[in-house]
Image (cartoon, rainbow, N blue to C red):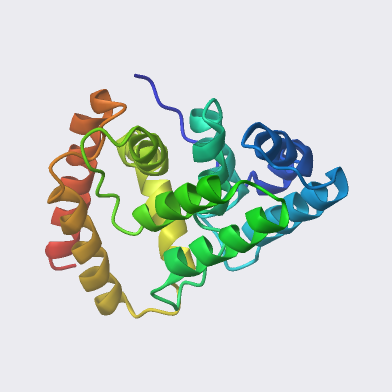
Length: 218
């Protein structure tokens, strides 16, 4: 399966493409019953959140990348809209806060309660990306969220640099320790991908290569 990472610095261009209408269409497909004006307001709020200045990787680019891979499943697409809607690099509870936020917003959109609960479950799943066998929705979202890990090495390096920019407040030594912990937790998963297993070898090679560089003295 071929992969092409989006060029860096393309967020403003994508803002012209990612409109509130895209959210509204997905919400309607998932059962939203609120007026169009409410869906437009919620879609705009989400786009604004994904456009915050502290973001360098977790941007509209990343959201579009995920949406393009899951939008045939409206419930999963709503989870993609919500999975990093709250993103504070200094906090450890972004996924939980994102789940609460998207739950409130979807309730405002009059999305059925069962759908809201499933979207929140999926958003919380992205905290560790551990997907149970047979969890189709979870596999779709987790695979989309982690697809960058299987990018060609130069694109992967740009992705790491963007994440590092989000954590510019963290000293280099602490970054190396924290990033190594994240990489090892991913490598410890039985499988990184369930829906797109062909990505597995490239992703594990990238993770292992980066982990080795973090553990090698500068």
